[in-house]
Picture 1 (tube, rainbow, N blue to C red):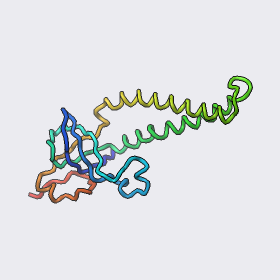
Picture 2 (picture 1 turned 180 degrees about the horizontal axis):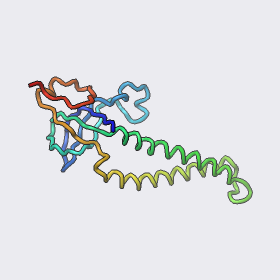
Picture 3 (picture 1 turned 180 degrees about the vertical axis):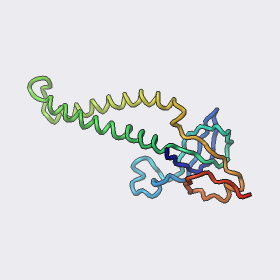
Length: 166
């Protein structure tokens, strides 16, 4: 399984979770449309499992399973779009003097937004269960030594954990 590893700085710890400030957002930093998805240009923060007990101020390597990122992005963006379109088609087909006595356009809009709402409710319920699983959360996999953290480029994304020179 492919894993994305990114360098960040622990800014807060809460129990077994650390809030990590990331400097590199991978492709987002080079994307012309990054502001559309909430990327304001500042550093991103995420909660990562802190099994290594990293303290505040430490530079760490955070690993995220790329498969999980793709899967949940598809669920959060693809399913609402799919159900919005299915609702529009269903509303349009049901319009008329029989079951749904409104214009075809109004019925399509009602159907689209109704299924969109239902999709968001289902996703909210489902994501509560999914986020409770620890195996899909980002995880701190290495704590960089202080001398290595000074050498590391803060905007680097790495494929493997760096080790300080001997």
